[in-house]
Image 1 (cartoon, rainbow, N blue to C red):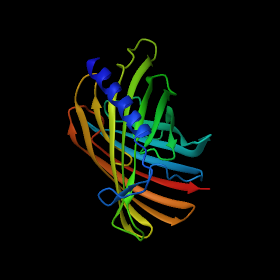
Image 2: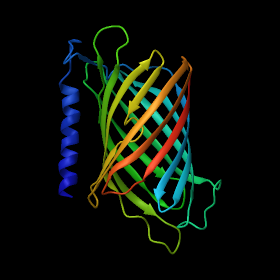
Image 3: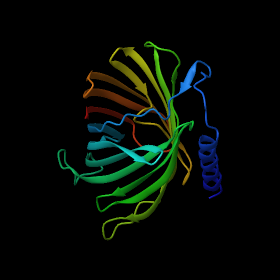
Image 4: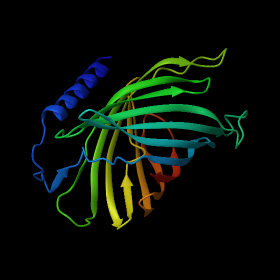
Length: 264
C-alpha cells in the first residue's frame, strides 16, 4: 500500500506539472517541440487480431474492435476510446477450450485530453469484464508527445511516453471457483515512432508496454514493434509483434498482431 500511495502522489504531481507548466511558445527543446495538444477531429475504427503464446503450449487468439472519437468540452479537447474483445484460449492446460470457440473478454473505456498550452494530457481508463471470470480495473493516466522541429520528413516521427496505474476491484468467478487476485499495476509505454518512408512507420512500444506488478512484485518488459502502412488518408494497415525480455511478472511469452484502421 505504501508503493500505491507514493505512485498515486507522483501521478497527481505529474498531472499538476502538465497543467501548470504551460508552454506559451513553440521553442524547440533538444530539437523537439511539444505536440500533446495536436489531435485529429476525425473518427477512427480499428479491427485488431492477436495471436498470443503464454507458455507450456498454451495459446490465445483475440479479436478486438477499437473506436476513437473526439471529445471536446469547452476549451478542453480530448479523445474517447472504446475497446471490446472476444478471446479463444486453448492448450493442454485448457482442455475444455478449442480453437474457434470465442467468448466475450472485456470492454474498455479510455478518455484523455488537455487544454491549449498544456505540456501533456491527463485521463483515465475503466475496464469491465464481459465474461463470468475477471475483475473491474480503473486508474489514471498521463501522457505527452514530442516531434522534431522544422518542416520536412525526418527519421524520428515522435516520442510519446505514457504512464498509467490500474487498480482492480469487484473480482468475479464461476460458482465454486476462486475469483482472481485483485490487480495493482503500473503500465509504462515509452513509445517511439520512426519514419521509414512517406507513408510507412515503425513504432516501438505503441501497443504493448512494460508492466510493474505492485500487488505481488515483479516486472514484465517486452520488445514491441509495429510496422504501419498508410494507403490513403482513410485507410491504414499495421502488423507487429512483442516478445518478453524480462518476466518476473508473467503475462505472455510472445505475441503477433495486426490491424486495419478506417478513418472518417
